[in-house]
Image (cartoon, rainbow, N blue to C red):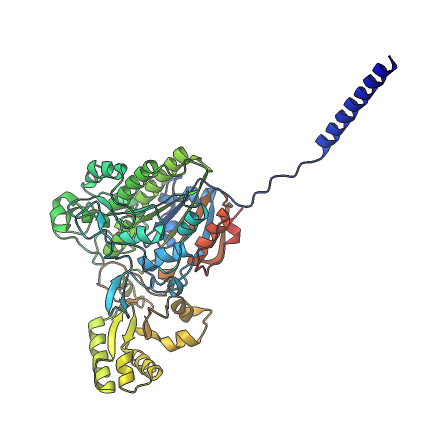
Length: 556
């Protein structure tokens, strides 16, 4: 009996002790889970070709609520964002956005450049080792092999053991190939011409996916073979110049360069589907294909981050053809705003609002048409390249007794034949300085620097800083010359780019979505800062050539 009572008392005491222990355990505060990185289901990189920053502010009152304004309202606006190198052109621009560095490191020193080793001009994305997928033409013989560093898209693939998917889309091949990086699942671009199809390279695949074939076989592109009219009444386009002027190009077969543009009537005179590139409809085609890719590739549908790189190229074609002050460029941006709205709505539906991160920037800016500036009494003009070259050749004959010293002049650089210089017993530094002094005599040239200066100095500001960031020791030339502000080597109609001047370097940077703060900054930020900012957000390694820094104000 006593034994039974003792056992019962022990059991009661044990139960009470256990209860007290459990209560004490529950009362101990649990540590909050630590979030070391954000993991959006999808990162979307948008590059708008040739978008000046002031296109955002100039056309602001015409934009709807779901495109540019949504990005500014819900996200972060870097108002003082710049390219920190030259030349400011499409190939280097896309490479720099995605590598987090400049041509000095990633090696894409132009769209085309003189290759000193091959002794020929090369294209930034061309690669004869691969074939076109989706066409019998050579338009798909492309790869990123000339880009010397990794991209943010490469780093995502490496970080996720290639489980994170990377898809890149653009009308221009270089606008897809370079952002996709070396490890992209796929890159697609527009062939144009008679087919109007989207194609790829055997670098990525052996055949087009079924969804791409379905898109190509549909009437999605054919539907844009129609007159280009303004989205809104043209008399409300007060932010651009007169529709009828002498500063714009005119397509073959057109009687006037004014709205409406009757595309069907001039279709066959302008390489058929290629005509759509230089209209606002080219961006619509890009969005249509991007939405098909979003669904066909199942982007952002699981917990592993994917990356979708989309470049809108028609803004560049329109700017080159009509100029930055044209009704056409204004209509193109108002319609692009609608395309962004359509894209963001699709992302909300497939990926989920707040579950993806977007950045939008440009690959370069553009200059106002110099002929227009001159008529408005603004210092501007054109470089007569032929006349300058003739003068320079005469100088070479007089100074060195031969023109064999000269290999190439391109991208505002002079390439010399170092073997010939050695054989003539000429000091290379002396030759560079003598040629630089000669170029300073030409009226349209404002500044000249030598390769020796690029090698020996570390510039931290101004034009030489920008030139040095674009100077690749293995690929760039011996002498670099800079035109006067407002001067370009181009035709007398339309706008262009490529210089280290502010009109070519100042571009937008907008970010919104998961992990992005609300706000803005007027502090200077630079193109190479984008990739490390996204890498920091994702908690992945920076691209291996990164020279930019994360923009701390942007990140939550």
